[in-house]
Amino acid sequence: MGRAGFWEKLTDGRIRCSLCAHRCLIIPHGRGICAVRENRAGNLESLVYCRIIAENIDPIEKKPLFHVLPGSLSYSIATAGCNFRCDFCQNHEISQKPALTGQVGGREKSPAAIVASAQQSGAGSISYTYTEPTVFFEYARDIAQLAHRAGLLNIFVTNGYMTAESLAGLEGLLDAANVDLKSFRDEFYRLRCGARLAPVLESLRKLKEMGVWVEVTTLLIPGYNDDREELLEMASFICSLGPETPWHISRFHPRYKLLGIPATPGASIYQAWEIGREAGLKYVYAGNMPGEPRENTCCSRCGLTLIERYGFSIRSFKLHGKNCPRCATPLDGIFKV
Image (cartoon, rainbow, N blue to C red):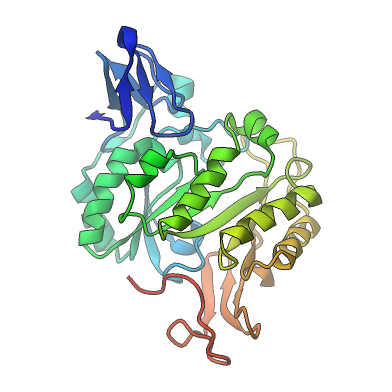
């Protein structure tokens, strides 16, 4: 356990947590929606500080991040817990474990040990991923401070449900984020995720204002969030963040509570890809479709294929520094620490 940040004492021993947009009111001995922040004797405690439950060395493309140190490794970590209840969660075994069982799990590993392991792995970054990194904010922040001193980038793979207060706590520490924009309808967020849309949009705007490199991912679920009008609105919003913002449109495969929903047809992915391009986005990608040409990075001016991919692997890399070799147009992103 560790003392949590972003909370205030109320009457009768209650606590108001301000870490995420739920702003949970937590009674004595109770926990927030994330199920890993507990009111103990009038103090808010993080049950996952230094309690790692997943630790892997991943290609950075798996996050997915296509414009941050392409071809590099990212040391990827998580604790248990999540502030969403998505019925299509890919990692529900660990994200929902505290809420479903009351158990946190994991093993102890200090921030210094995490950074040392990341350095030994040859990774260029640390990704806080698999579950929602906001719920282990204090642990992530302490790691991130040491990571920067060691010359490593810090990356959040997040649902974007932070508050302005917690985002401010990452100022100068967070280099890049992949934010799930799961839908452009509040009803979807309420029914499928137990959350709301507006705070996610506000976090996206704030992250861009902070100078964080942002890429957006949308898991396209047949019959749920693949309506053309909704996709047009979503693409227009992402473009308003900046046309250089990459949009990853990922193919859904049956998972968790949506086992009866078929995988996303390729035609739906292609339609969304076209919508993104028509909206003015420079970089739109088809995800979970290895071998699909739309997962390649092309020059936004002349169309030359700059980075050819197969899934999470890079087959060819044609950049000169960060510029197109044919027309010298710079590729947007982070290409060195």
